[in-house]
Amino acid sequence: MSNTIRTQADILKKLGIPSLNPMQEEALSVIGKNMNTVLLSPTGTGKTLAFLLPLLETLDAGCSEIQALVLVPSRELAIQIEQVVRDMGSGFKVNAVYGGRPISKDKIELKHTPAILIGTPGRIADHFGGDRFSKRDIKTLVLDEFDKSLETGFEGEMSAIINQLPNLEKRILTSATQGVEIPKFVKLDNPVVIDYLDSKKESKLAIKTVISPDKDKLQTLLDLLLHIGNQPGIIFCNYKDSIERVSTFLNKNKINHTCFSGGMEQRDRERSLIKFRNGTCQVLIATDLAARGIDIPEMKYIIHYELPRAIEEFTHRNGRTARVNAKGTAYVLRSKTEFIPEFIKDVATVDISKKAAFQPQYWETLFISGGRKDKISKGDIAGLFFKQGGLNKDQLGIIELKQDCAFVSVPVSLADKLTKKLNNSRLKNKKVRVTVL
Image (tube, rainbow, N blue to C red):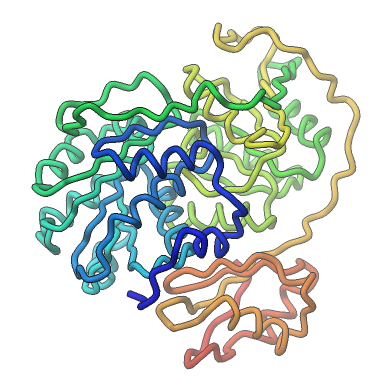
């Protein structure tokens, strides 16, 4: 743990956020004064920061045990929150644990006990069962996107975990959905509810229908993408088999994209999101796993390639675009004979015959075989690419630094040249491989 515990002003400055929004201001005040809080706010409104700021104020710098536990429904959300805490530079150690990676990796990281532990219920339950750390100092519990955790069948693990926390003083539940029944095992007595679900500013979301003349909608999907042009967006499917089919078709038609579903290995899921975030791929084909709880930038559009089965799925998918102050479009792609759920109201049909300029891929992602555990910083990586790689600032894209590796986006035209020049370079005291991802 760092010796410097930052103030709220320091944290906001480090995050590049000029001020908190009204929901975050209210959450900071309410969570600070109350034992039990439920925070309801739409996706993309900053709930993570809203609960992390008051959580940090509960931590004791003199305590060497885990003091706060954050339970999340997905691996991606665990990774995302861990990164936010690191970016805040709070001075408190944080670790995320989740299924899909070796438990031995967790054990190594948990030897140096964090103040904040983030994890999926299954993996946290495994660590609780192994009695790998003390639970007596865990005084704050956050159930982030708790409705999703219940939906994905984590109720048993969550109940077992909460029953092993004897000294809880504060419970914080967050959700982007209203009306979910909170189980008795959470022991949420007389919570204060902060509800911003209905107070969202006038939506700038446009919903448009695209009619496919054929039952098979692949060609119409391609026509729609060519109509939209070079803009970041998500194509939503209901099944991983559908994702594979759409991906194969887009590959044949040279549309650069990446995929994301629960059926993929954790490493592949993480790398797909990295390529999507840094612009290597502008199209993400995904299941509803990508509708919330993952760290991706503002979308210009989303496409319902397969229609959602429930209004919640429709709402969360649409919530990936037109967030905060931006405009966005949700395209409902359907065949002439396809049944339309009643929650999708009659919306204007759009003509997609006009094609936009579709520019070739600009960015490529390079993999570096060294990370935080090797004492490597983003500045070290930037220095390598500027000094030895000969790049200028405009040619160096997003750098993502992980515990044991890093990813850097560079122009496609320079990727091969850079790998030949920089492979087996030294970063700090480590010789690193540099390869195209």
